[in-house]
Image 1 (cartoon, rainbow, N blue to C red):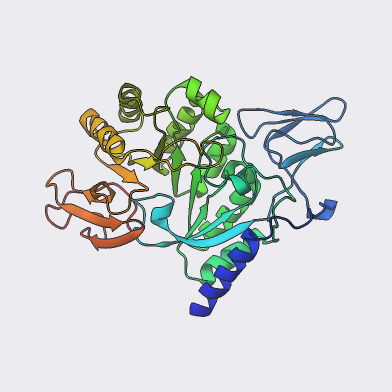
Image 2: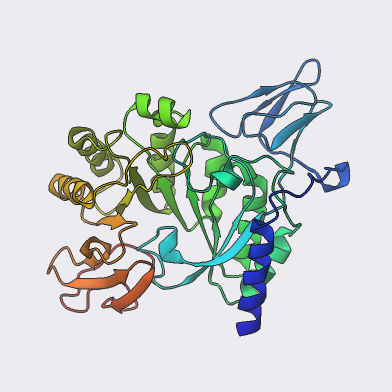
Length: 366
């Protein structure tokens, strides 16, 4: 087991370091035809995977940069071409009500269908195929590697899983048959049809609800709020365990009234049991001039969410904060005590009941 972990660690380092290597070519035999596109006249195609619905001329790529029109057929350039593979604690996704303390075999390709100015993985999310060294790992091989290291979960994460949809879907199907659970951390910018096709193979999702105004989505992400809200509803309706992350940026999306409106929407459309993570911003990418989010701001917003009626509200990127702990909503006792990604104490039984008062805590616990 130690050898496998060490080899995977070296493998992930090798994938992350060679940013300056020459771009590889993409021969036809390595390409996979994309799903969800329409053929239009004159060898033009329209991608139907995400709400952008890019109309792509021959020999051009869509907004995400990873889907290319070749003679009237759309291909994905990142199928089975991950740029990073790591073993993470599930808490890093973050998923707090899903197999606490378990290992998540985590994978990503390059690319994204948003342009968030605060992206923490911009070196790979904003890269194009060939700009970052990748390695070919088929869905079957990926599942076998997860089995080898005894990881009970495969996570599609780091960049935007929507843009490597075909790779995620095929891997998830094989993983499900092998008894491995599938989770994704996504911005939720995906069309309903592909999302619904994915849901039967998806056990959990953490969706970044980046803000709660259209203006914020347009200016900070080049995205659309309503499409993300629709994704949240679809995941909930299809029985996928759902958690939400809201990255709080000082003076940009930290207005208490707007956050209150967001929490009311979550309560009324998704339910009071959906965990919400307020995550601390650190200066990154195009927002290096901003200061880190004050912890006091995160704590005030958490109080707003609790007052609205949400039961499980957490603060992230502040290791050791009391708001990393899951408390029983009935008796108030600490159930899962965390410090960063480490579980210090777990007072749930195997069925997810509080050991003190037997209250059922929503989540997937075994």
